[in-house]
Amino acid sequence: MAALLALAATAWAAKITVPDVNGNKVSPLEGKARKATVLLFITNDCPISNSYAPEFTRICKAYTAKKIAFYLVYADTSLSAADAKKHTQDYGYTCLALLDREHLLVKATGATITPEAAVLSTEGKLLYRGRIDDRYVDFGKARVQPTVRDLRDALDAIVQGKPVPHPTTKALGCTIPPLPQK
Image 1 (tube, rainbow, N blue to C red):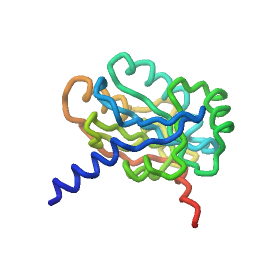
Image 2: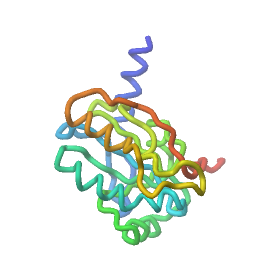
Image 3: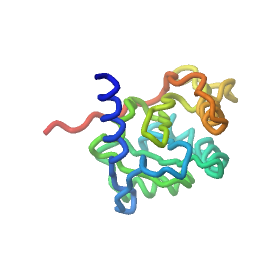
Image 4: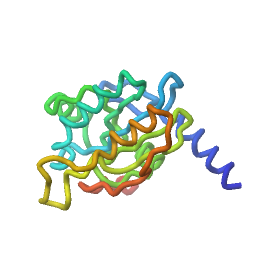
């Protein structure tokens, strides 16, 4: 029974469609011509999220040629497309930015923090969820350089066809805002 529920959840996740910052509908978890999909959950006003923009852009550049797809996911339901688009430009993001206004991707991955990365297989299986690296030790306490690069380690394993060594790590940052009450 658990296997059937996992299969149904995977099929549901693959069909998720959300708008990008230009108003186009995108199904980020569809596509077999890749090894994995990375969703980076952010909010435009989280200082820790914003500080990771250069590193996430470097990761995108390093792994796109290795058949990894990247999406920036704005998890703040009240953020306008224009403000999200401006934020991506201001911070130099190069990957496609999505608006998860109904938290469909948040729910599919279990993300709770920004920034938090979720890496999914082409079948929609969650391979990794957690921090980008260990640069932030605690709120207000950061290392000059990280000692562990968790997202890169996960992507290296996937590219090499190996299991992700640490599939879950604890992300540090801002809480994903809840959906508005109806």
